Length: 230
Image (cartoon, rainbow, N blue to C red):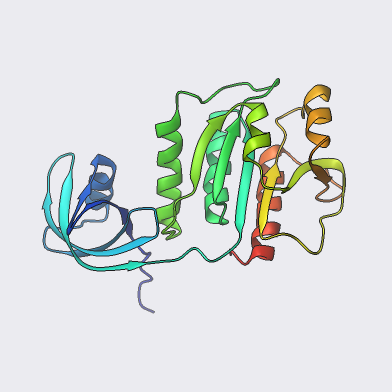
């Protein structure tokens, strides 16, 4: 059997017919043994699909010339995730899987029981999204942003659901514009839950109590399937 080669997608910053690559992409090039003169595939994260001839690879940057460009439309529904601030390793894993499952926007919100805040870690969060998007070949990178608990109300789509063990079953018919809110370890405070339930419906994922990252992955998987995103 022949060797199965995984796709390699690079993130680029285009300027007319030239695209530039930062130090993270140079590392990726070195790991995958890309050489000057090779043709690679790249994206700007906004739907752009580029074929590029690599012209120069320096220590911390690289550039190439564009030989073809296509725009890949995002035709599926919109899926927005509100994930609680928490321990980094569990949050990182959650973000990676949400990207793979087609989530379009990820908001990491602070709350009464947050063990950690990420207001000053936006670049770190964006890099996780970038790497996960490249791995699963997504040309539209999800938006990711740390927010406060009350920001949920201005950012959430009309059809937004709270993941709650006491909630109702997942509806069979859904909107094309969906939001999901997951509580932190230990759950929302009574005050937070009361505020959320004034605007959003609760849904239950089954008969078992799940950790927040498991609940997020299960819920995003279900709704991604319904929206045709995976």
